[in-house]
Amino acid sequence: MPAHPSTAALVSVNVAEIERVLTRVTYLAGRARQHERLMAAAGLALDRAAVAILRHIAESEPLRPGALAVRLSVEASHVTRQLGQLEQGGYVIRVPDPDDRRAQRVQITDAALAAVERIREVSRRGVEMALADWSEGDLEHLAVLFRRMVGDFVAHAEDRLDVPAAAS
Image (tube, rainbow, N blue to C red; front, side, top):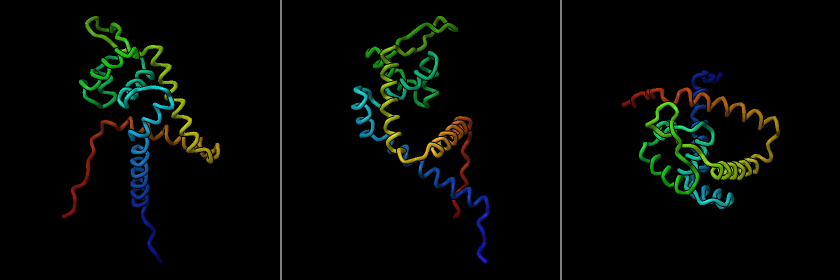
């Protein structure tokens, strides 16, 4: 009689498959060509970093550039450079920090909100096309699981990753 794999082994296989699929989706979504298609469809000329920053600011209250860098897990100098370009383009403005008069926060403009909404709409259409054959129940189930997964990823984002040493 064949041995049944343990629950731990099944989890490992499932986790390996999830990691593989997430890596593939991340690659496909993050390709320069995909970004260019998204920008063309949205009628915008923003680079990937600018879009990430605008989307993040659009989903939050005005925040300090340093806090934005931490949330995006990038160097502060990268965010400062991007914010300068976005400010020149009329996408963000700097406002006084109510908690510290010496500091400033970055706030999104109405033009940027409209741009982010166009990007989201084009992106949603792409997802809708890809999942057109899925049932409403499957879409609902996927949405629930994605929300749960992202919440867990956020909760463990700063956890230490202990990787077992390779066997000799």
